[in-house]
Length: 228
Image 1 (tube, rainbow, N blue to C red):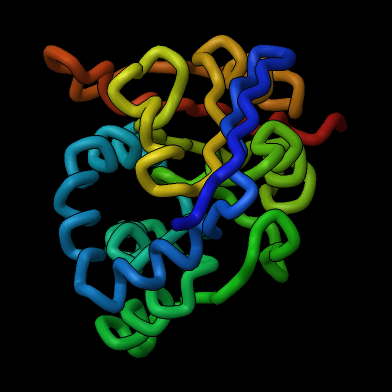
Image 2 (tube, rainbow, N blue to C red):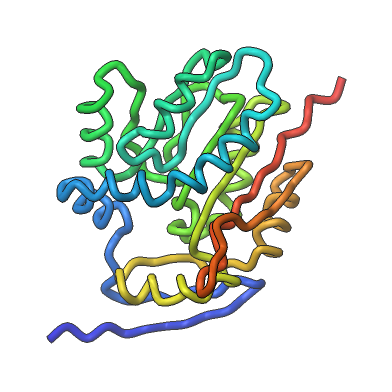
């Protein structure tokens, strides 16, 4: 029998549960892709992603480049690519089977295998989308700074969606049940992290809430224009 030693910490608004034998989230998603669960993930998150893309692209009236962080089988990348003003859309994921699946579905698509936070795009982009990804990082607020500084063009827009956060108690047992690290932040901590990273027009909404489920937390923000 494997015994897991658990350490719970709470500091600066961040609750973390750590297991000595925790699995990597990318390994879990690799297995899910091999089992065909990527299709279920797409269906399960579709409604929330529709809200996110509407926020991201509501005023898109000129050519833009885009990237999806944690792209899975590439379904959001393909939606972005279909926008009339999208010049290029790409995705990155740390699960090799997800990237392989994306290439199977869309052989001409731009899908990259990469581990975060180390991986970076070759060129900054105008639009960034990420669903159910950032809270798997050990330091997601530090990664927001990296996104702002290294991933985005001035006036670029970012939208992040997540189901695991402090105000959604139904998600609090996920780190234990999956044996995967998750950084559990409050809505206010996420908003403050966005602002500290340099984003403006920061907004937070919860979509799809129902009894026993607080909904998907959707955060959006804009990188300021360069000073003239």
